[in-house]
Each structure stands twice: as structure tokens, then as C-alpha cells.
Image (cartoon, rainbow, N blue to C red; front, side):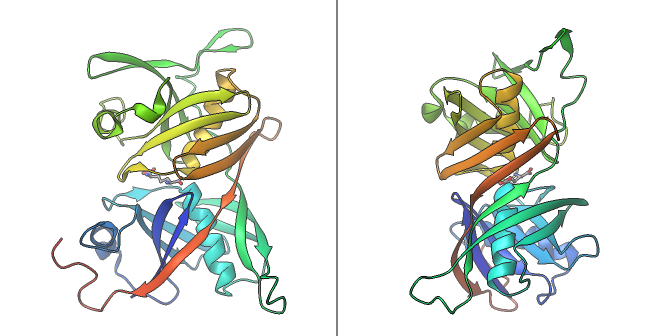
Length: 295
Ligand SMILES: N[C@H](CCC[C@H](N)C(=O)O)C(=O)O
């Protein structure tokens, strides 16, 4: 099975061309676990299949490192765009990708190598219309006119935190706190992920405001642990920043692995995410082993 290792801001996945590689659905969760293992496998935050689709130009089928499904992946969808353009599966700089039944629209920035101007360019950056954030009305009760109570209390390890829950197709709990760089996410992350409040588990973002246009975020991802970036997480963070009156509608989210620009268009109620997509290397998993017999 051929694969391509790619990342967006250090959030790295193994990409497999589902037009050519036939993998039984029942094998995919186990394959994601094995290949994602950083010691016995290729090493990644998860596995993404790029498949044909009747609803959009392509389908993205995403698995976390523990084999669970993610409904949406912001860094992944930009890499899918780079993969399909760079490999000639499309010649269009405007494509649609469906994930878990939801279609997203992407604008690709293509750059040519100045030393080889006749050669096809490659995608360096992608802007994605990530759709509307979903705010559970029960969790966003209007306290007074024009005011939203977006902070829900949650007790974790005997301590009360306040979070803003935003779904970007997948669930996010956004927590504003100081000293984000020093937090022990290995210890705290799983307590949020597996808290009774989240029967389907959650991704959790820990955020520090830097100024009205910038914040710093670390994420504990459902099914993958701490990652260097999370695209849907950045969208959820920007929405939470705006709802909590902490920033304007355009936010640069700084991450351990880079930064993403997020714009929440309040009129259309749509979130746009812009950021890089990078190919690291290609390889082949030998038939029969499916990458890492020891795991
Ligand atoms: N890293 C991804 C999100 C993966 C989501 C996954 N961890 C889940 O919802 O289970 C992103 O860039 O949006």
C-alpha cells in the first residue's frame, strides 16, 4: 500500500489514495493504529483516505491515531487539497471535499518553482470555508439582551474550569487560561477527553489571548493526544474568542507547530481557515505486514 506523509503546522497524517488502494472498511481502524504508532509504525496523528465521491470532487475519510473516526479535520483537508492537485487528480484551484457527509469548499494557492517555470506548480497554502460553527443553544443561554453566557463550568480533577463548547462538525471544548505553554496536557487532556460531560469524548483547546487579533493555543485531541496543531480546533477557538469578547472576528491562532489565520464572517456565519500544507515523504507499506507486526 502506497502512502504519502503530509502535515499542516506539524499536525501529521498518513494519506492513502483510495482511488487505487483497496482496504476493507473493517481493517481501517486497526491499520490507523498500527501505522500511526511512532515507534512500531510510520508515525503520525492518524490516517486519511482520499476517496472518490458523488457529492463532492473528493471524499476525505479520517481516522485518529487510536483508530477512532474524526468527522472533520482542518489540517487534513488542506493536505488533501495539496495531494489531489500536486498529483494531478485535479487541475482546478477551487475544489470541494466531503467528510462525514459535510461538503467543504477550498481555494488553493499554487506556486511555481521559479527555476522550472514550465513545470506544474504545487500547492503551498489553502483557504477553506469550514462552514458554520454549531453552538448548542442549551450551552449558549442569553443572559441579557446582546450578552451571551458561553462559559459552562466543568469540574476536572477537583478543579473548576470554564469552557466554551463549539462544534465544527467535531466537538471542541475551549478553555481560556494563563500559562498555556507550561500546562501538563498529558495529565489534564485525558481527564477532559473522557469526562462524563462528553459521551462521544472531546477535543480540548487551552488558549491564552495575546492581543485583540492573536492567541496561543495547545490542543489535546480526542483519539490522538497532544498534537502540534488542530485546524478545526483553531476555528472553534476563534469563535470562542469572539463570543467571549476577547478578539475581533479575524484571529491568528499561534500553535506549537505554526499558525493559522481564522476569519469568522458573522454575516454569512461561516468560518474561513487559511494555512499551509506540506508533503514530507512517500513510501510503501509491504503487502501482508500492513506496517508493524509488533504493535
Ligand atoms: N487535527 C484535526 C482534527 C482531528 C479531530 C479529531 N481528533 C476528532 O475530532 O476526533 C484538525 O486539524 O482539525
